[in-house]
Length: 258
Image (cartoon, rainbow, N blue to C red; front, side, top):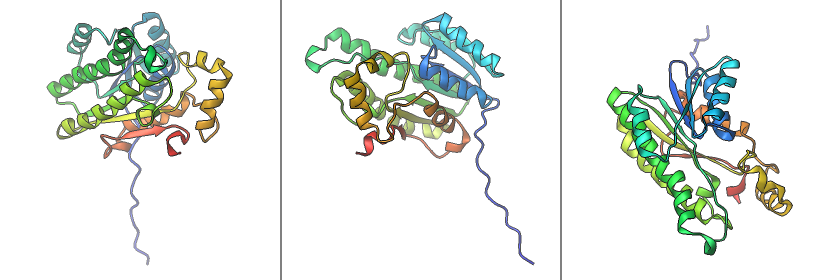
């Protein structure tokens, strides 16, 4: 008689009982990642500067059977950020998604341009994560920080000096976060997408030469969609990635493989 063997079980991708926060959640990637977490059972808080946009997105998630709430929060306002986290129980999942870009040659960059991009893409990401972690530590809550980086945090690009500076810095920040937080059961990882079709990027693709240059770099032959990132976010948020921290999950269609 053959001895029966118990097979290993795939760790759960479900997020039931967990609370998630998604910044920059009024449109595009933020809405998609919030929807993915809600579909997996998380209770999701969507925040952005536009109350109307996050209210609509949260309503759509509830209509689809998820649990979601929208809240106005300017993540560049440190006082507002601290007050937001102090007034709530700890989140188990943070998706640090708010960001911006001002593409131009480096010789045209002004100090105001530098501050606008670095303050939102890096400073706000740092201090939102810090405020979230402080609350997690106070409540004894473990969990997962997910920062939305970019393939441009792994390579350079013309007219992308500010964006690359912010996303390369995010990569280093993430690795140090992972080391600080590992003893507390908090993981920190990055999703690094290629160009994704969103309201923010769509105007750039109206330039045929720019679109061609992008498609020449994406080896799978198409611009990314927000759906391409939903599984990555769910993986990093869930127990399926329990041994993963300090890493960058590059979703770039092969751009950085060349």
